[in-house]
Image 1 (cartoon, protein in one colour):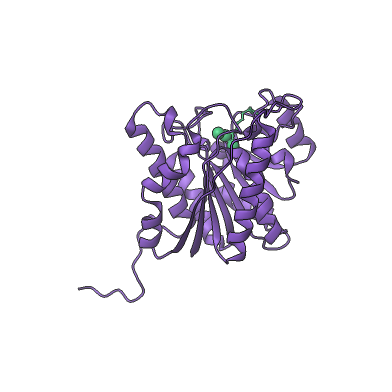
Image 2 (cartoon, protein in one colour):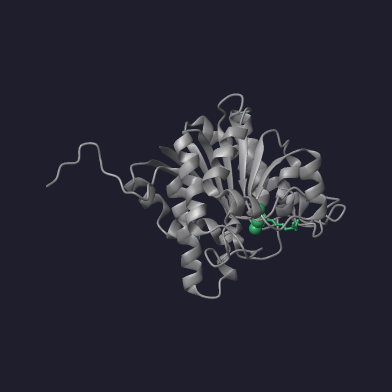
Length: 293
Ligand SMILES: N[C@@H](CC/C=C/[B-](O)(O)O)C(=O)O
Ligand SMILES: [Mn+2]
Ligand SMILES: [Mn+2]
Ligand SMILES: [Mn+2]
């Protein structure tokens, strides 16, 4: 696996400061070394720099529209570049509004991509249906949900639920995870997105899809989330399709942890999710040329 990492230290898609520290907190938990230690070739493109935007007044209730727009232009350009350089792209957030740019930039290179959205939330509010005006709850509404599957939903607004049903979007809520088990959810997710042809997968992973006991340092925690094992299983299954083309890991906010331990716990889980996407197997592994010493 060859992995291109881009950090997007951005927080304007939501009101809680701290999520802009996500990229470096995840790196500090050893992301690059751990990927290299499992045989990945890694290029870290560093962090994007987001200029301050003044007078960024709300537009029909939507907050920080100009900052979010500009940031996503930069993210789209970076992701497109990383894809053209031949890597599987890993975008470290930052809040989930960054998926606008990440998916847009990825689609510029791979227009036939499909999206797997792992999240407690649907993030598909329109500016008018949004109860908060925060754009991290809206990214999917700016993208044509061609082929998208949701996993982990448990906090969906009425407007979002209407849109999901109206568009017939495939969803696996936490009820479905309980009813089917994560293995069946992943089997049916792959059946759905690969029903016609094999497509590159864009996995957009909001860390709040996992239970707050597993990943407490996040801005919109919702109880009854995915276990660590379910969260990892999703990454292992996507990895074995061989079709993962871009990954977002978003919404790690160290400022919302109650302790240093909660920051580390959240960051370590974020790293393990990435490792699962790039071949880490819980059963263990050994190099082809391994010899008992
Ligand atoms: N549905 C709420 C919550 C949004 C949550 C966004 B998140 O999934 O990126 O955490 C809203 O629209 O404000
Ligand atoms: Mn989200
Ligand atoms: Mn969420
Ligand atoms: Mn969130």
